Length: 117
Image 1 (cartoon, helix red, strand yellow):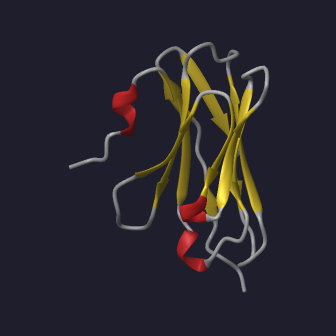
Image 2: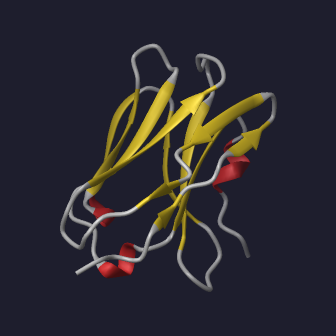
């Protein structure tokens, strides 16, 4: 069974450019990693991962500055490389309901994580 494509466009935030893979696809239950490269090594900024399900507003999945963070609500994790030059979102067993547009952005503004009203 094929899950609808995971689409991950590039996102610019402040002076940092976060480049994402243009398109990822997987089958239901097969893990997938979405990787983001940062235009410079992060120093004090956070990586914000978002997901936008069809017909819905974007939702925050994670906010991380360094290291590794488990995301039990989506059965996955977020990782930022030791040198801060890249980050990734891993979905361990994606389901059909996880088909969405996934974004990552770099920034120090914690207001980026507020849910839209």
